[in-house]
Image (cartoon, rainbow over all chains, first blue to last red; front, side, top):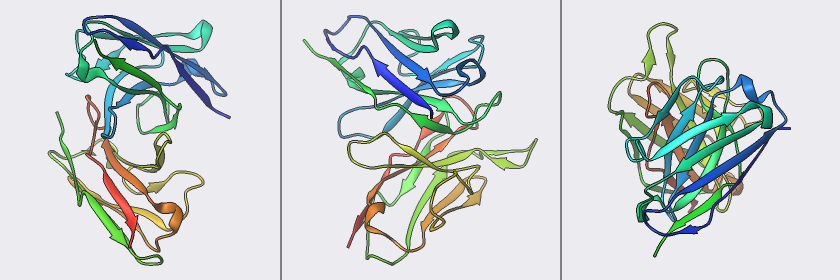
Length: 121
Length: 113
């Protein structure tokens, strides 16, 4: 059974930094593209970033480009999101999600429960 | 960026009746190399993460009841729930994975009338 468990969400001040983690199990982690998707309180889903199976390519939403960095560690079966220059509008529940197929990126078939990031002074 | 627009924003349907949600993309998500539409539908119930229902615009994910169906091509897509059940109350999102940044529609809230 696929399991994705996010951690690292806390309350942080504007301008601060934070690293989110996602521990993956139940599948061959280094075969799949992985994603971060966020959801502000009471709002819809916003795709944030993806990293391909071997970490050689990464893509970002315009709203986070230059501030967030996605990475993965296959030895730890873990996905990360380094967040810097945080803004109040980054406040959201951050989900880790697995791509359905490999190597071509498609739909997101497994999701974690999310970790809450609150940016507030 | 591809903009995804869903309609309506909310929908109330009687139990056992049909529910139809529309999704329009600002450009085609039909991939010419394989004739596949790079469009997915997700269901999100309160307090839960999203769940994949449909991919390639019309292929049901394993385990999804056959009352859920997807149709459309190019820029116009539809999610249909053929006979609404109480457990189908949720917010539904379409998403394109044709090009980055992958984008979601704003969501459609489906309720019981």
